[in-house]
Length: 444
Image 1 (tube, rainbow, N blue to C red):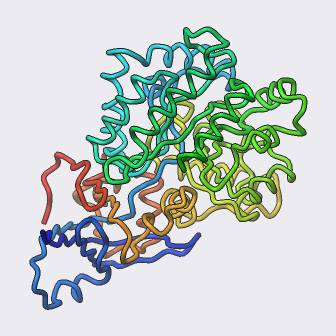
Image 2: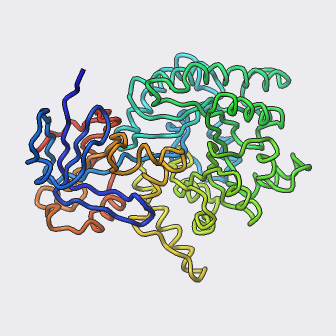
Image 3: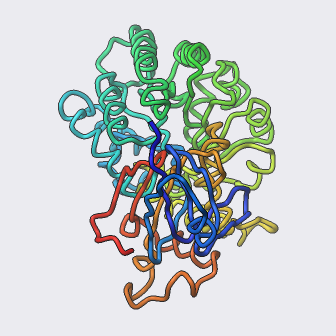
């Protein structure tokens, strides 16, 4: 069966390389069976003789971008955004563990689908997520993600030290490993590859060596991802040092347990030594930078240049609920502003440009997932994960505002970062299929 071609017209912006901005003011994408078949100026592609019909979607004053990629968030925690102002560990005990403890049974299964609607509404087409320690709601979350049509990497949270679960402590590691493998076998590669599994030991403070080694072995066996937290908070680092006296530092715990590799995502990584950063480079692990969460909990500011200069792939994460919102435009803004603050007291600190921050939320996130050749920019042959934004919704006075024709691509992207959000999202698409469309009437 030959599918009809879809043509999307608008101002196209992407960043195929760090800081490299590409722009087609009146551009067009031709999508064939979910894949970008052509990209260029509308006048050229629209007049090209064809034997196959194109269904054009014209967007007046619309900006077309690669779908946003969120490398780190927690499904059960969304209800607790902006709650509490304490440091990481007391915040987890007071606000998050009680919430996650309830993310099971009918209540948890009812909540799970709502999260994926929110992701699509915010323009996020790919996300790396953790659930709670319960198999039933992780399974329900995967089912909801499949129905939503999003590109999702996800896993059941694994904990066996100070767990909020009801299992006997000696049974927790084996139960967690058994349930996680069962979920992996069911969902890894499901929905034509849009869904993938991530074995998810929460962090070393809440995991035994046995659990972490088991997660590593299962991830290798099933070619799945691994996600965890690393060096987010100084108190956390001290607890790891006391808990794993045989390790020379926090990163060494993960390395010796086999958790580090090219399919490993490490959230935060704020307080690392040069040795630890070098280990991450050598093992090929990637970093999820979560600046809104780092600021909300007062954890610190990532030395972004030191992480990137070593060659480590870095993307952005909302880290809901430590991050107070799913809006990745605000995460980009915090990425820029946190490095700007560093530059006030550290000489020579590079401040990311809007194009560089946008790279981290698109192509950079794709590279971190090992999907740089699949999504993240407007290359022919890549899958059509796209975001369409309404320029007028981001400008003052809305309908009386200037058009795309009056603005530079740098100004358009800066406007998205400083004023973008779900109010401006017209449509989100994964593999060319609409996963969210604004109820606002479309302008052609």
